[in-house]
Image (cartoon, rainbow, N blue to C red; front, side, top):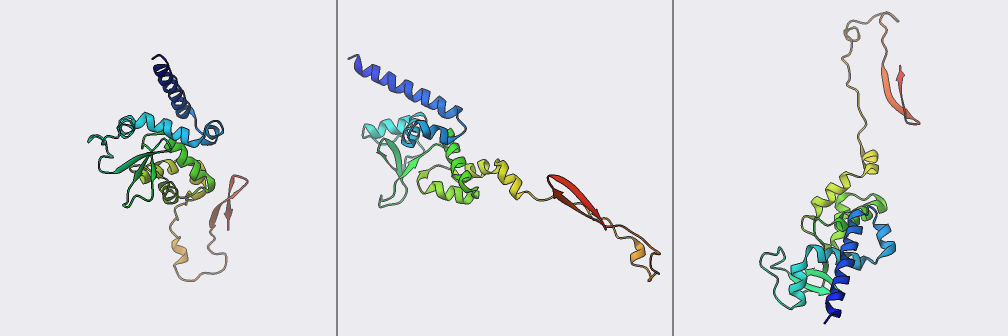
Length: 196
């Protein structure tokens, strides 16, 4: 009688410690050095989908309050999976939109080659199912500092009006003198302007 509650308490405390470790971590590679990805996903799913997992383990229907009521759900290798198309050939792992693990996965896939938000969402949606995935990916990719630097627009100076002397009748050489400014030219993170 005592062994069952103790194992449940031990597994619950392991899940809680793993959840806190996921929440405090900012790099998925550090977590993958310690734990397999399937364990991280099952810990996240047990936090966000307890009623769905419990009803599937008891072979009951998923509750009507769940957003997954009309979908085909199954527990495969201790992971909650969904099949969006019939016949059920392709199963995708379900992740919650508020999960820190999802954000770590997005950053991990994005930083492989600094892919666009569309490519990251496409890559993740082949294996995972998340409601409003594209919006979440857009929000995470927008915060990437390397992409901000690479794709930022250069500041442009407003063009001043041309002096009227250029539009008037022809004049002699050096009767009217003006300077044009070209730039900025960035060399070693220092801005230079060229006077012509």
